[in-house]
Length: 273
Image (tube, rainbow, N blue to C red; front, top):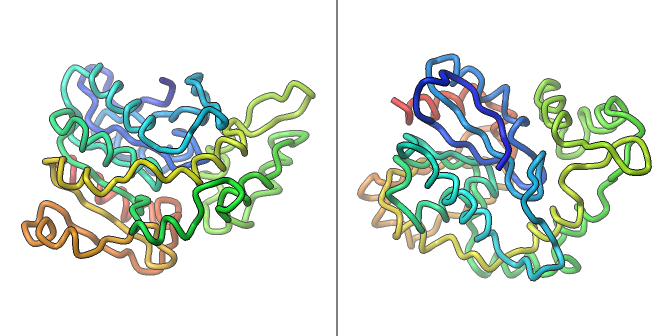
């Protein structure tokens, strides 16, 4: 499993971070570097089919669930000398962290989830369970996948579409590992549009039981606008105990780690103690 490591090399990993669908570990360097500079060892991973990962990622191989991402994370956590204090993730990465915590709760200390994809079943069904019926998947399949240069990709994305609220340095970091040389010359996306689309249409991982199977504190930061996290009354008992907390961050979209990195970083540092 590939990714980036930051912070003191002579201590155990304190924080494991998982990225959103279509992105990569390096995307979050601007968010995570100050955490490492505060004395914590940080490991951000490239999930299969993203960044520099070489793990199998075949969108046509019955890929209907994010369970593999959760299992990949469990496999990584099993290799660490001690459980990390915090597992955190954005969007699909947050959901994968939740799935891992439900499978093996003893492998981590707590979760910080940044607008994780946790929806009511009826809402998830309405988004479509195939690449043809999911608007997000259709959009991913239409994504431009070839650029003459890294600069051409940067110019095409800066201030536009999903990237319109991103700081320039985070876009540049995303593209560093988000582009790979193309066989035909130039560069292509490291996360193939077909794989990104398959992830958007995958619906069979059912994250809700993981809230109850996990045992750690869970802090959720959700977007104010168009959040992908829809916590309902099933979690009332856990919310009442304080094991789960949910906070809506004013003025943010699904890309809240890019929009308010200071607030997100503060939540990570608080969780790390």
